[in-house]
Amino acid sequence: MQSTTLSFANMHNHGELFANIFRARRESFIVQRQWNLPETMGMEYDQYDTPVSRWLAVHSDCGQVLAGLRLTPTTAKCGMYSYMIRDAQNGLLDSIPSDLLYQSAPIDPQTWEVTRGFITADLPAAQRQKVRMKLVLEMLRTSRTEGISRMIALLPSNWGRWASRCRLEMQPAGRNMNMGGIDYQAVWIDFSTQLH
Image (tube, rainbow, N blue to C red; front, top):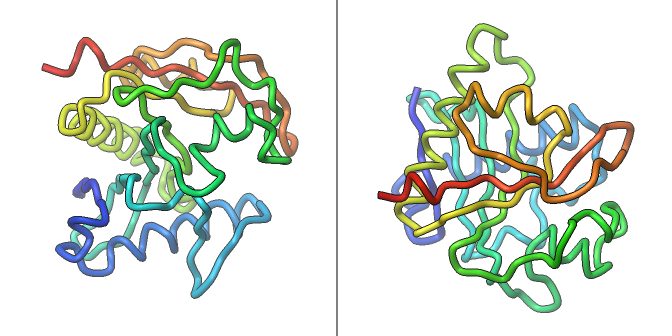
């Protein structure tokens, strides 16, 4: 089992892995969760998959993606869009309430957003925590490389149950919200003590 952070600058070094992340996202979000998201050629994507983002994957040696997520700097700008949480707060996304945060969404080069996090549904329960920890370690490595001191994410509200097991310092950034029958909450993830 390996972990890799992909960007537009290095994706050519990793064969099909970049496309496999988008295929696994389609399976997780469109097929399993039945979210209404853009897709093409068996891959899920959206307006936030731009050259400023990074894609983290936990994968087998042959490129089968077991888990993944996307990181986007909160300074991102592409046309009318910035990053998902800020755009939701600004009323640009119908699917996420605009009052999701306790404060204004940050615009800070050291704060990045985490989105599209998943672990494949067919992964045995005995492996899930191992894969989750591998993904967290890749987040830590990427935070050091990119100078990220904190992240903001919209997660299922049960995040507190697994945050300590993954050794993540997390705290609420907004209220609990029910979206599509699932409770979600925006959270801060602090990496500032681990940057050195």
